[in-house]
Amino acid sequence: MANDLETLKRETLSALTAAHTQVEWDAVRVSTLGRSGKLTALLRQLGSFSPQERKERGQSLNRLRDELTALIEERGKEIEEEALQQRLQQERVDVTQPPTVPVQGKIHPISRTIEEITTIFSAMNFRVAEGPDVETQWHNFSALNTPAHHPARTEQDTFYLPPEAGKEEARVLRTQTSGVQIRTMLDDGAPVRIIAPGRTYRADHDATHSPMFHQCEGLVVEEGITLGHLKGCLIEFLRVFFNKPELPVRFRASYFPFTEPSMEIDIGWSKTSGEIGAGADWLEVLGAGMVHPRVLANCGLDPQRWQGFAFGMGVERLAMLKNGIPDLRSFYESDLRWLRHYGFSALSPATLTEGF
Image 1 (tube, rainbow, N blue to C red):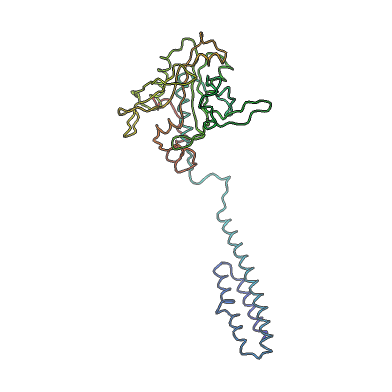
Image 2 (cartoon, one colour; image 1 turned 90 degrees about the horizontal axis):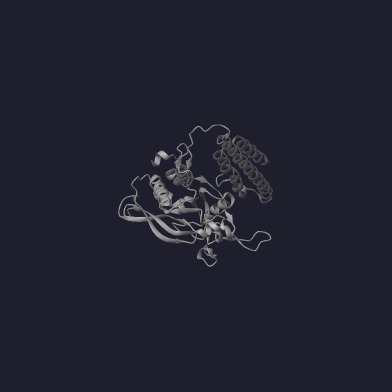
């Protein structure tokens, strides 16, 4: 009787060795241990034996079942590992080889818009200036004639950071790039003609506001600067940027603590269609004004000799208007589908010919 058990064991081992796929392995498992399997059939025959023989044969069958179960499970794991290694070998990619399919990247609309702004103002002899994202309150507020009680300095609008070692005043994540203007006047004196694009931070978040966004501010300080210079500079910029030679531009009186007089600049557009330069509606796009004499004095410049104008614009806002992007939050969602749609070719840099 032991011969049939040995035969079953040899047949099962031979079948497991020959099995190289999950399907073949499962067929061996079912034919051996399944409800109609060979071992199950032997267990059902125990009733035909005498009590003593039934006891001995039952013990042998149970040992054989445990042994075959362990062998089948072990072979199953080996087959899974072989399949995994085969799949890894088939899907192997040599990252040092050139791609077989051309991959085309896209320039983000924010980067493209900053590039366009820089190109236009560079033609007007502006240079790009930079400064730190973490500013002192003096550079970010006080030097710009912003009093301590001004709403912009409240914690609900501004991100404050612990003070530097040995200092009492808390630092801020800059709410505007105006600190770059202050640092430039302090370091270089006058004359000055700069733009300052960069990241800024405010405690605000919705479809048209983000806690981190980009601004581009400009500053001109020279002798004999007038409001006419400001208007001519910004009208020319807006018409070139939006590629609308006859773009209507309107200047409205406003208030900023660091300019006097201050103004908001609107462009003509259609509220119905959203088309820039069409319709009878107006849309605010940036703020500007003549540099306040107190700001010049704070930077060591004589207001009797030097005059200037400053302006500031939101980069995302200009990008949304020019490219028809409806939601500011989509700029930062890292959606490649969005970037493929709104992005720009890396081989197509911004040039003045686009505006002229």
